[in-house]
Each structure stands twice: as C-alpha cells, then as structure tokens.
Length: 43
Image (cartoon, rainbow, N blue to C red; front, side, top):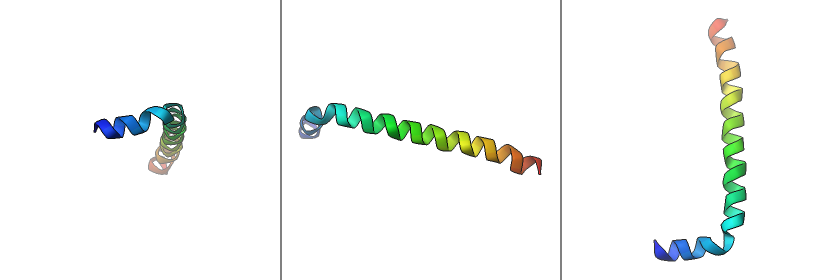
C-alpha cells in the first residue's frame, strides 16, 4: 500500500485529471439514462 501511494504521488495531477474526466463521463451517462428511462416508462 505504501509503495502504491509512492507510485501515485508523482502523477497526482494526472490522476486528478483522469478522475475528473471519469466523473464527468459517469454523470453524463447517468443523466442520459435518467432522460431516456422516464420516456420509456411513459411509453
């Protein structure tokens, strides 16, 4: 675990950007699903 943390530290900014983009992608997918599902349930 300590070695893993040591590996992450130099690329902290890169990992932060990756997590930021992945969070945006997940939120976008969830919003798209939430937009589609009510329409499907209505029809």
